Length: 159
Picture 1 (spheres, one colour):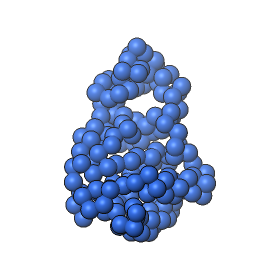
Picture 2: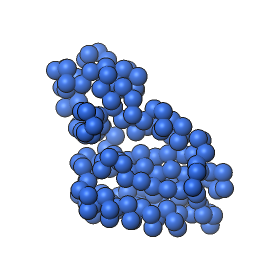
Picture 3: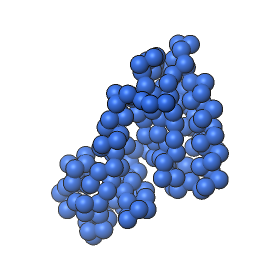
Picture 4: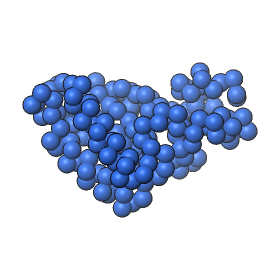
């Protein structure tokens, strides 16, 4: 299925890395969910993927049916179920994700600030902008250098 650049995107970041077995089980649950995900009785053109063993990304192409408050609530319900099942935090927006080489690291805001202070995170460090809202933003602005991210405006005084 190909999705419009304007498709809606939601990114949920885990506070720990999922194991291979967990990714497989979670992906299976997400596939079942998106196959039956509806808005006011209309099937949504949707997909959900586990990326980097840390992120759950929902994509919905609204060309055939628009996402509604109720349909968003149902996606949040599955996220909360996954949190309970796997003992992870997927809704804490104060956890920061970044890359060290090809490895994803997630840490809390305070430790992230410390890493900037001690120069372990710098202008070129790849960070994850989980605030992206469209597929186009996701493809172009989800993984970006710190200096080109919203993180820079919040934490620049530490560089």
